[in-house]
Image (cartoon, rainbow, N blue to C red; front, side, top):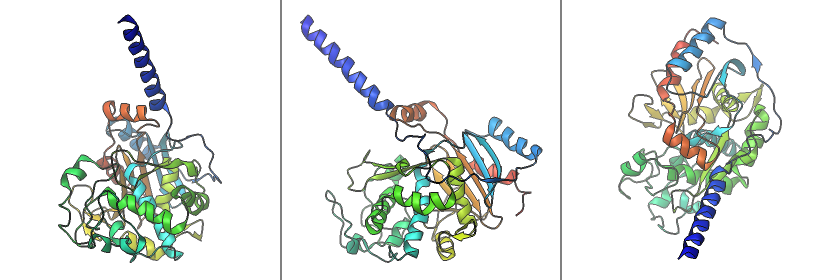
Length: 355
């Protein structure tokens, strides 16, 4: 009996050691060097205005680890760990929207292509003939009419999912991660590039991103039996701000066109109305706020970007949700999430800034 107890004890310790090693394994190498980094030009806010924003972040905001403000391509203000690549969570979808726009501009992706013609299906829950009529555009709009389980979905998404077959493709807006994960698969299938490779070559290098490496994009299958994995993008606050500035400048960076103005206009058009206090519309994987006349990206935990195209202004607020499974669990259970009201409050405080 003692021998059995001893064996069980050693087995338990070994299991705990393995769990600890796995739990501490980093998702990404945060120190990996960017391909061609270029520092941002600076025209910093007046000290009084910058201090007012810092005080709001420190004393009133729910939780912000990094904040960046750009006017055009010029840095107005930065706060916190702006150079640390963090999980974008659902803000990844807005980044992919830009990559898809570049692919559309290059003739690599057809927005009218259907899932049937693209060979998209599920082995465990095959798509119906009606579901296979959903297009790439429908996925971008979250109007596919396909209501299947997916990775990285929230409880609200899971519990609020319509009955399968309730709405034909293109007729109903439902923010469903299945649509967005399949978009990632379609992008890689049609371009022949991984999302990380394309993001590096098509956006990071032209925009001079300082902290992004192609390996900061990876896939996981957690939480779903779907054939289509959740792609994860880790990016720093100052690099994400460049994405916003590209949108604010109608697809141009450093006097070079990166994505067509037509795509920027189309992708930030309101295709659906959404209820809620912070966003009232949805474009091609971008949230919209008509009161602020702003385009926004939103990710779980506190990943927010606000783009004012009229005033060429980009604001980014980030929360570090961890770079390992253990770090993620600690954040989920013990730390406060960011809140979309905070970046909108900061935007209003910066109301006097003009182009």
